[in-house]
Length: 292
Image (cartoon, rainbow, N blue to C red; front, top):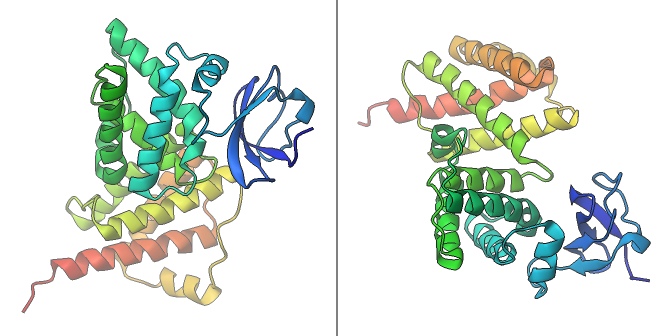
């Protein structure tokens, strides 16, 4: 009997699960026939279903794990692990090891396509370049690591795919399809702000990065069905009376979010968005004023 309890962080397939090892306060990979069957996030993994446990950042048994994952090249797991460590350092990810399974699977398919000359369309290349420049830079470094370790050059667009994995890792349990949805929504939101400002706002400076972070927090709450942190009624009233450009932008953004996420934006959500729109547009206005 193993000590401690393994709770599901993310399932990979019915035979592989990423789990949290409570006894050692670390993320591990559990394998076994049907070990993940019927399990979801937070569920306890049955001890009698576990055949092997791997520590992503230090396990020397990568060949056995690659076989369990169904990877065509056993080296891919080690490459994915190296990339996750790099991304953790560059982006300040608190738990980069949660990326290992999904990234190994993606890289295995990507390197196989590259060797066979198969080209696929990677979505959101332009949007990621403007919204997540740090993550994209890490994505390009990931391609360099792949070429160095596996001897295969992946298409430049694959840096975008890696960046989306890194973005998702900054928010616990955010899968890539949700990250894509978040990115698409953010680009539409910036289009609204551009129209209101009458020019293209920067996507890569610090105020824009803060705005994106706050909106991503909102999206994660929407996806999980949670309410946004309550906004004081006095602040809500004040925000409803602010400059018309803030009010109009927030209303347009709320409409975009409702269309993309399929749920109405309540008073607290509206005020939350308005607060961060106000901060962003205030910075834009201040930076546009001539200095004396």
